[in-house]
Length: 79
Image (cartoon, rainbow, N blue to C red; front, top):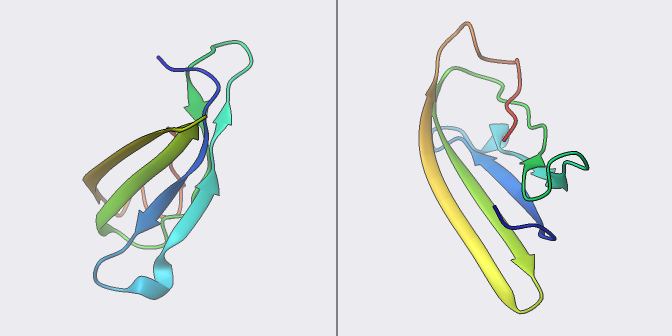
């Protein structure tokens, strides 16, 4: 775990860019190096989650595709 990062998570909907969402990463005070954000995933299907965070001159980037079912849509995601 890496503490002291600032950055954001961007949720991209490849099939409909109007649904894209972003949220600022917040480090959990009781768990240094662990972060949380809330983004709204407005529809089921394939989403691309992009984390872009920095500490000083070092940049951390991670991208992952996820599939959201109809029972999870509109519930948000945290990470």
